[in-house]
Every structure is written in structure tokens, then in C-alpha cells.
Image (cartoon, rainbow, N blue to C red; front, side, top):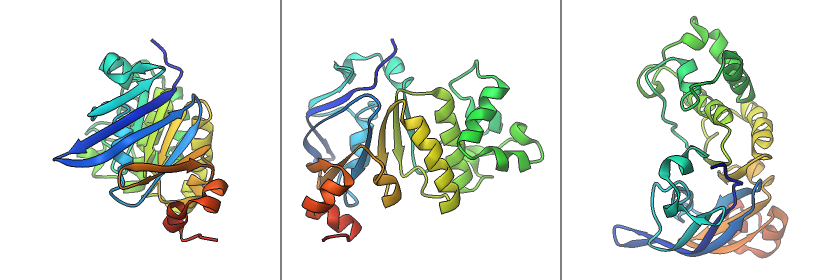
Amino acid sequence: QPIRGEVAFENVSFGYNGAAVLKGISFVARPGETIAIVGQTGSGKTTLTRLINRIFDADDGRVLVDGVDVRDWSLESLRSQISAIEQDPFLFSRTVRENIAFGVPAATEDDIRAAAQAAQAHDFISEFRDGYATEIGERGVTLSGGQRQRLAIARAFLTDPRILILDDSTSAIDSATEDQIQRAMRHISSQRTTFLITHRLSQIRWADRILVLRRGELVDQGTHEELLERSPDYCRIFSRCG
């Protein structure tokens, strides 16, 4: 069943190896909203996003997608509508074309190229001797980090998920390319619910709302301007206290 993309956390706690990683997290992400998640290393940012597509399950509380507990969704149905792009994306030892179209067997050549262009990947793919038919080796070893990330972003454009999770997904990309991807990202995220984990202030600023985590607790949420004014934690992250 298609989803609208509302994500709600209701008093969610999660622990790992006896240590509390998230404690009593509650918030609602409305369909189409871009939510940035910030906090020091180890504050629980990645863990929070992994509860949405059920890589982990909450110990207490509930994670809801469109008002339904994620544990009541079929895993296939849930994950088919959530795309997660992480710092080191998983690529297959297949062609560029197959990697971009993974999960979308009906994708046409035009669809694949359009997704690659949106992700600023088409130019470097075209420079390969075999273009989109280039085999990329186990886990994409023949590609640079930035190229791998752009292929993963192209795959996300093509799968057209309702919920998009970007976890430091442009960390290996130079700033000029990142600016182009940013524009593409804003385009892709305007039609879906997006969770953004990044250390780049330029990305965080354009989020609709920012969640501030400290040692597994949600200590504040608001816009960039609101948080700069009132949140010492947010100021510290960016050394921007006024």
C-alpha cells in the first residue's frame, strides 16, 4: 500500500549491549518535511533513523509510519518505500546500470540516465569506456567515495521513496559537486519526508526542522535560527553561540 510518509516517535527508547542509546524520544515528521538530526558523535543520530526501516526495533515506545506501528507493516512493503543512503553505500559487483536500477526492474534507459543526471553522476559515468555498462567491482572498489555516493543517490532518485534517509551521504563529495547535488536533493526531498544527518551547516540550514540530540535524548527542536538563539547544544555543535 502506498504511504504518505508521516513518521512519529512515541516515547521511544533503545539500548545496545546494555547501554541506553536512545531515551524517551518523541516527535512527529509530517509528510514532505525535511528533518535534520544533529548531535555530538555517539548521541544516537544514526540509530534513530535505523528504527524507521527496522534495522533495529525499539525496546520501549512506538515508531509509527502513517499512524501504523512499523512492526505491523510487512517488512517488504515498509522498506520498498524507504531509501537510506549512508556514508559508505552498498554497491554490487555488477554494471553501473544495474546498480542504479536495483529494485526497479522496469526502469528504462531514459529513467536510469535521468536519475544519474539528477545525482550529478552522468558525466563521470559517460567518461568510463563502457559507460553505463561498466562493471564496478565488489562493493564498488573501482570508484571513488564521491562516485559511489552519487550512484547511491541516483538509485534513490529512481526508486522514488516516500521516506528518504541521508546519513552523511555527501561526505566524500567536493563542495562544487555537493552544491549541485544539494539542488537535486532539495528537488527530491520536496516530495517526500527526508531525514538528514550531516555535519555540513549548509545542508542543515535548509531543513524544515532540526532535532538536537544529546546522549540519546532529544533536548530541543526547531529551525536553525530558533536553535541558534536558545539552544546551547546547537550553538556548541557549530561554535556559533551569540
